[in-house]
Amino acid sequence: MQQATGHPTEKQIYKVALASIIGSVIEQYDFLVTGIIAATVWGDVFFKLPGLAAIAAAIAVYGMGIVIRPLGAYIFGNLADRVGRKDAMVYALVLMGVSTLLIGLTPSFDRIGVIAPALLIVFRLVQGISFGAEFGTAATWVVEQAARSKYRAFWGAWVGFAIPLGLLLGFGSVIVVKSLMTHEQFLSWGWRIFFVVGFIVAIVGIVIRTRTEDSFVFEGYKSKSELLAHPARQVWRDMPLRILRTSLVNAMFSGVFFLSFVFGTGYMKSVGFTAMQAETIGLIAAGFMLVFMIIGSLLADRINRRTILLTSAVVAFLFAIPYFYLLNSGNFMLAAIAEIIGFGFVFGFGYGAVPTFYTENFPTKYRASGASAGYQVSQVYGGGLIPILAGMMLHKYGIHHAYLYIGIMVMCYAVLAIFAILATPDTKGASLEA
Image (tube, rainbow, N blue to C red; front, side, top):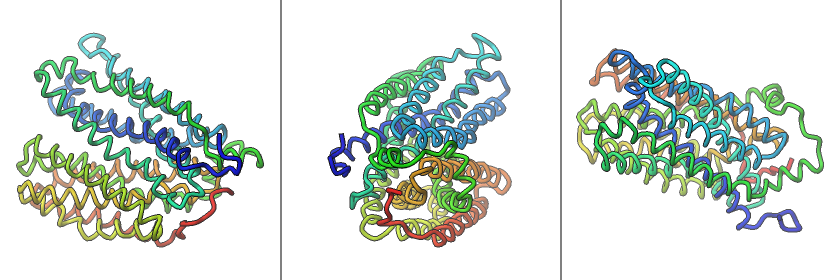
């Protein structure tokens, strides 16, 4: 129960932050593992196509889970604004756990023919819908619970902490499992372990979330006001420009993330790094990302949200081309510095303010729907599109020239983010109980 004053204690805020981060860690873990498995395993297991065609088909299925995320944001954002943040998060985690397990249990093409890739597509789409539910509603849940805390951005950033933690868990588990079996065993059944583990952890998360209270802000609003019949639809009618502005901010962050993680790993291999070196550099950057995220969140509370976001956007603009120059050196230390700055700092530092930035920009009546919409739409044209365009540029211009065009593309996204940040009033200290 909340205190009689309706003011949650730090312990109560912590419980909600912990409950929110569980599902988000699973999301990032599954995202990383699924990406690796899709690129290295699914082509052989689920598609009987020649060479690169099988890999392309597997990656396309993986991409479907990203493209469909806005649908999940719409469904679960609406649910969160109608029923409650906690209940929506429980339902999302149930869907995530079940779909993840079903992917791991899907028989191969050799066993059931074309039904195998058909099932994989269905389960991946369901998984993508559940992923679309996580960020906006989880951030809303935590930030609302911390609405009266002077560390509101820090508590909100717990949703973001899940990203480096999920990366560390994902990279680490892949390395460990691969070291314990042969390549043939990994292709045959070893890869399925990750999805079973994801399901088990989801069960733990469900238990934790069901035993946690909803945000006091939503409970107070529900007791005093009539809830909207269709909040996810209404927020698009009332605040389309605000959704667009917040979306442009995260388009840069998600683009930097996908470019460094999805495209960057393959790029490092192209310039001479081994897979182990690339994964090690990713682990190092993920560790620094967590540190920068904590620092960014604390400064967002001490200074304001916009300054933190602008700092990351400006560094992204200035470092876009030097980032690739350092990777092209082929030197492990320089490449690690590139990832620490271009991935760890740009994404991590700014992300310390992102969850509060999104939730503070929308009123309680459709806060989860608005935050989810702006965030997940950006994943499509930011995180989903940038690696695709980068890959096309690499194919067309080659390793020695493509980085200039890719860098310019990142700079354009950074400029759009800067304008969007400047056009959005800072929300530090704004009341969320309205």
